[in-house]
Length: 280
Image (cartoon, helix red, strand yellow):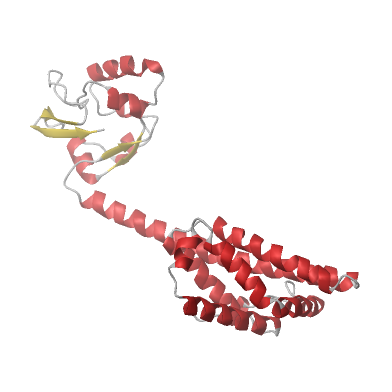
């Protein structure tokens, strides 16, 4: 990715007076960088999600990453924000691809702040104006960092969801087996082309409608009603049902075992019988 000039903070985010306050923040952080990094890393290694990843990394690699992080932040304090922000976005991508909760990063930010804030207070205790300015600058920096990570994290997650949905759609649409899905209320949520051919319906005819009223035989629907008297969700009660048949099947077609059910069924309007299998 080639960063644009919009990748850098705008003047509204870091006006000149806040840039000076950011340098006050950096003066304290730089002085205690090693101690703060060691303490924060120790807490990160004990973290439920981040710990296993960090403990698996060679110590020299961790040290190199900390040095690079220090260099990027120093360049940002001096006005060159692009490497710093680009790295944050890369972190967002990595967290999303590894399946880490974004909240894990807030845990680390909290540990970092707990180490740095007391040192800033000690450094500027005799100058309330510089103290408040350094703390405000630190807060603005952390907000910028978290928003940059979050933006890329969400973008990556959304892209992965789109890819998963596309694969799901491709598998269903190319499947020779009829697939009809329903939600916990028993309403049809999905119907693939094979199901549309088997049950002779268009998606608009069935999506959102109860499966019991659409493709399950009336006699079985009455049986389902008896099974569901315990107020169980429709999908759960349907699984408990002793058996069910396609609404367009012959009325005398036998019931099927609860898990996989097969029987000669008339599942087309032209009256041809063909084997049907159902899974719940």
